[in-house]
Image 1 (cartoon, rainbow, N blue to C red):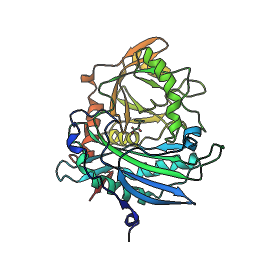
Image 2 (tube, rainbow, N blue to C red; image 1 turned 135 degrees about the horizontal axis):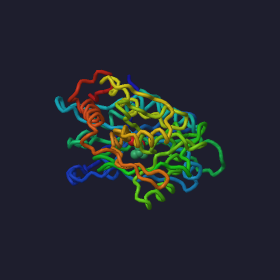
Image 3 (tube, rainbow, N blue to C red; image 1 turned 180 degrees about the vertical axis):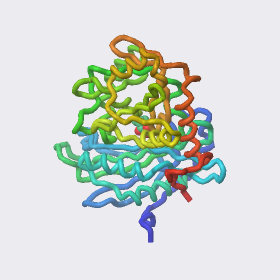
Length: 356
Ligand code: COI
């Protein structure tokens, strides 16, 4: 008997699939027919169920609303272009990171195998929601939060895990303008910047609004102490190509260990690129730009895939990146990543988990 046997399934009476416009799939707005829900109480996970996607009822005293005891994940599934099988990209890494986040926030972990089995059941049920257009996918959003009806500050005694899924196009439709931030801080070492805590994102919203007023799409966060070293973009990890070498900030304790980040580093190494994973100062990037050696800059993430940076803003100056046509290495790697995810390119690293 597998653990998935305990999963209750309550299907929708009528699918919304036929009335969904697959030619208009903004990120995060379209959800499939079903979702997974699991409760934690009396010290164990229980009542795993797949139910119609819809609103949930919570108390206004909810732990997570008051004290941000919440974490989430971002994953993608595609259909194999040859066999039609559903392909999940490195789902165990997400299951592990969800648990790392849960533990850091004082929440119970969720069994990895069960997470993957339940997710596969959900996707199997809603597999017709997987889009097949270029640069689109089924986006998977697991979220885990403290659900006690109590406003004292302590870890919740009850939790809920939901997995919602929906078809999506690219997160960013075009290259982004990014401001290098020196005033506000996303995360300090020893904080929660290296896990996917919901609160990490809240901390970025006010500075992001200010940056938007200056015409930027995103912020490139620097280290919280000196603001000398670049960290990540918040929705993406960051890469640079300087004089033929690939640079990305080393995981410092305040950077999210992105699964796409790890995959992109591997794909560059496979192609013989020298990949430098280390502390990278803002000054080095400016110097490289001034010397004409900053060939490329881009963000990577599950939602963002590979998103090119058009301009970097720093201390009131704008540093324009080279024309996209010249940035062939990152486009090739992006193609390769999408190729692996859609079964067009062989999965030589064992990253794909087939849903059958
Ligand atoms: C993802 O890339 O999946 C993320 O979770 C980042 C962002 C959309 C919040």
